[in-house]
Image (cartoon, rainbow, N blue to C red; front, side, top):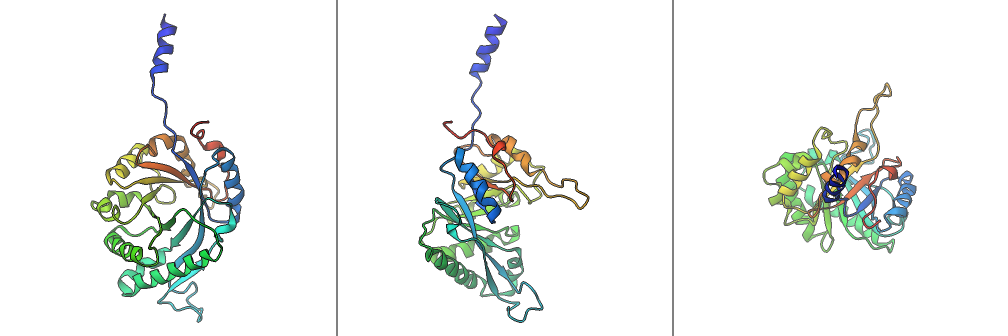
Length: 273
């Protein structure tokens, strides 16, 4: 009888949720075969191809060929680097942070840069599902970033489905949801290389859901290593709590940044499998 009651109790436990979808960023050629491995079990996985980085100032201050007070574009992989479906990922470098005060034409220059990147992508004759803007904007600049996004949506990003990356510190900002909700399709909450390793998975979900912005979870499959060889991060630990950190319905997917590291054995089973 005790054994029967135990079985019944187990049967009554709710099934653990799994992410609605698992997708992967493709930053370098080393990530391409990892996408193929993911699609073997998650065939609808979207590839977020890093097509360009926008930075401010010269890469090398001694290089006379670059204006140290201007926006520059460094191209990444072409959107054809992997089979569709793909999303375009455009990184805005931290060097742009200093330009919010220094350059009154920053938003217009960002628009020009985005326009050039998208025009080049269109020459590849490949469609994309969305444009992701990967920018770790300082919290104090969130209102200016929102105003910039509004202008860009009327300009070079017009007609695009736009997702932005966010940090846990962004979610804690009182007006984050109010600012972003009208402007973007959603945000991707990154929990790698952000100093947020100690934040509980349930806290991530609570903070993100409270913004009322549709969101996804961005996790890393690589670890940073100290000079002495010891591991400095715990990025891969997030894979064991994806069901808690990315609950439906507002969290719609997990995005993986492999950093060239295999991760297929860390994933839960694909929905329906």
